[in-house]
Image 1 (cartoon, rainbow, N blue to C red):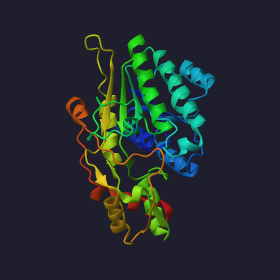
Image 2: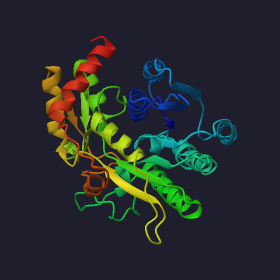
Image 3: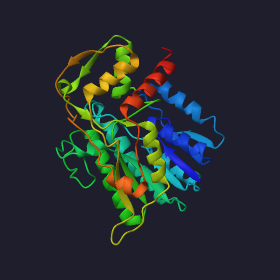
Length: 326
């Protein structure tokens, strides 16, 4: 089976590509290796993928329409697409909203156009986010809940991607699955995410800023569980049901909402050092709590996350110390 993975040098993209390669699939990876966070970390992930003979890589920006059209013309044999390339981060969307339109709207459109031109394509799986639920107070978040009041521009662009994908599925019969990820963490994780930020600060004796004075909860989901769920989704394309196009949306999370202060305590235990904390007000664009209802993906895909933060955080800290030579 031939797969295209966009964002192959990213956190989830790296793990998913590696899992596909290990089971013997051919993977073409694309990534623009931008400097939103440490490029050396992206190159280190990529170096591990390049050890596989069945992996090829193209440095390419999905927002570059001409480059994407050229890529599509040269790679007609792709059978499934895992689209994870995006501009991530709630807070950065307050600083540089144009980057989100370029990657998450224009870039997403370019991927959809590529997909509808691949005659042998059987399935597109693309990344959305739990941020689309905005300030919903009903918990846990269900796929059927309203998503028309995003709390951040990042969330607005990802919701736009969902709507565009639905439309392409309706117009062109494109089988597509959108995954709303809930706070993914683990080895090779992003430096702008909580686990990485807190571990680095505690080891460095720096102060952690804890938003909303610590009164926050997140559905923290370990990368191994996420990877299994992503691969399972790739292998099960949706079908047309009645008047509905072959498009579906799933929450993909741990189905546990952990208090942020407990998350910090687990990191402290794994590091072996207490954190210096500063309790501060809520950051614009953030939400107080996330919690995934995963009933649909459990029923359809068999997704069953099993890693608690008590098991996952020590694995991340171990990787962090090894990678950074601590």
